[in-house]
Length: 230
Length: 188
Ligand SMILES: [Cu+2]
Image (cartoon, rainbow over all chains, first blue to last red; front, side, top):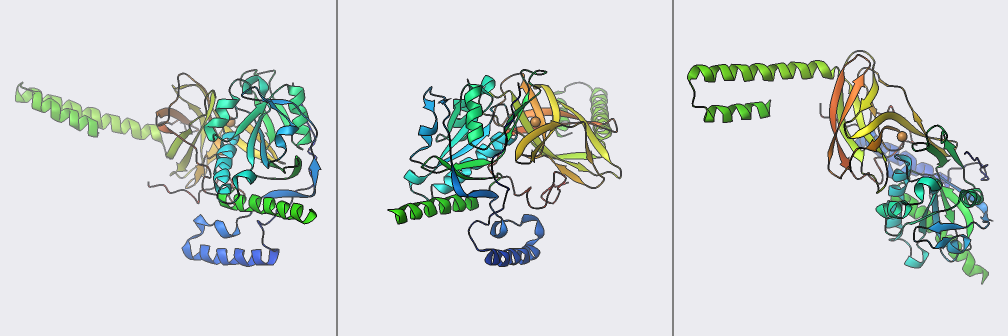
């Protein structure tokens, strides 16, 4: 079984966390200078950027019907009224998925220092490999954070979710190795606003503090815009 | 060596036999220790391994990932060609890569370390794919892994099971590939 979905997102662009480009460049030069003084191996903070892709117009999502580990339904409804960060992955992914989820747990911690609990995004891991994910997804996501939510379901519904999230999934060699096959999947983290619209994505690995600044700024901007409309 | 010498002391203290017997015992033990040292040296070739670890896996996972840094102290290329562990049914050499936004993972036949260089296995890049643990793998456990190299030598390392870091020192996006050695703090 193999299913490929086109990535619907626009071409990728790297966005500085918030500064205008000029200022950003200056910071970068400054950081380079510091790096030259302190030894070049440990450069990072000031000039690190959040690798992101934010749409000029948010994209509405279409319906999909998955289940949470508890058995409760998980669909569009669960993405409304709060911000969400959604990752596609599979529980038998030994390297990339645990790394991303651990990374997100750190981002989440930083976010809770920046936004009110009501605005703090829920982190959702969609298990795109239901044969192996179904039984263990609940425990799997809890390992990374008590607040993380895991959801999976029938392949037909997963495929709908993946498509509307602009993602991609492909099983590698499932026929040859029904136990140990790999699953290739989108690496990015989709950002969904409280209207259930996809506003864009960020790409791991994320510097937790920088990513939290970036996401908090996005949330604040959206709140300001909503307030201006009313 | 340390263990051997401790045993030796204990042996001498307990021993009530003749001086000749004592001397013979000491000679034998020293010879054995020397032999062990020589064997270890010839088996380890020019590669040293630093900071081997295995990511503690969330419950239910039957594939784990191991990381380390390989340092080639020799004057010629050397390649890691195989890995195995008594704690797992199979160990493969793998690389994770993000290609056009898609996270992929591939098996690699061998990993070459140029002379004087270090190749670092780390999350999101090169890893030892540890397949099907034979029994539960616990945090803090030391898992032996045997590494085989292109010159026929082999090396057994103990990889500690640890929680993965949320953000291992950045950053593969900036300028480092899997061949990066600038972040290594090896002592040897
Ligand atoms: Cu792997």
